[in-house]
Amino acid sequence: MQISKYSANGNDFIIFAADKKMERSKLACALCDRHEGVGADGLIVLLPNSEYDFEWQFYNSDGSTASMCGNGSRACAHYAFVNNIAPKNMRFLTGAGVISATVEEDIAEVELTKPKKISEPFEKLGFTWHAYDTGVPHLVTVVNDCNMFNLDISQKMRYNYNANINFMTIKNSNELFVRTYERGVEDETLACGTGMAAAFFTAFNMGLSARKTTVIPKSKEPLFLRMKGEKILFKGRVKFIFTANLNFNEETNEICS
Image 1 (cartoon, rainbow, N blue to C red):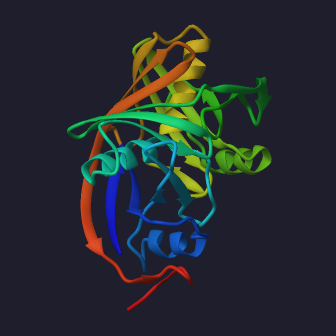
Image 2 (cartoon, rainbow, N blue to C red):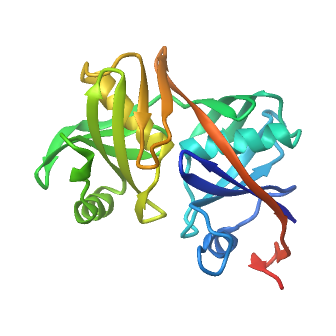
């Protein structure tokens, strides 16, 4: 089986295409292991779909599944285009719904599903939290400096509310900074596309962001977000890292020597 590794805004993914859907949690754990595997934040498997260009299976590095991953969707769109699985303007099915994407050279833009408010803002552990689902649930707090990001608080909030945790600094209406703790990775990541979208949507609804803005994650690689009606589009560079042939048993989801 041939796999490819991609990076998008600092999130890295292992991607391959398969003919059939099956349980791949153990394979995701094995491949994403940064010491004894290839190493990645997540595994993406592209599968045939009769209605859309393809559908995906997405696994976090701990083997858990996720309905959506923003940067993962951009990476897999690029993979699908360069491997002739989909045209440059494509639609594919995720657990969160149908995603539209456009690929131009090394830039991929994705239209997310309509964001949903989970709850009204609330106070917890000394911060005000805004709750939105941008494909997966996120909590966002606005802080004066993203260095206020706190791993212990993020872990507590993640397990209490089963959501990803985002600390956002608003520099001005056209530039936001975000740091994210991700479920499934169970740590801070260099970037999170749906987290950056949730942060942008929070700032926009607070009247503190323009309809089009730049969001900068911990990786320092900018992502460009904009509102289109009630949906969020986000665009940024995708990096192809390598392609390799890997032997593994799809029946047992184990890497073979």
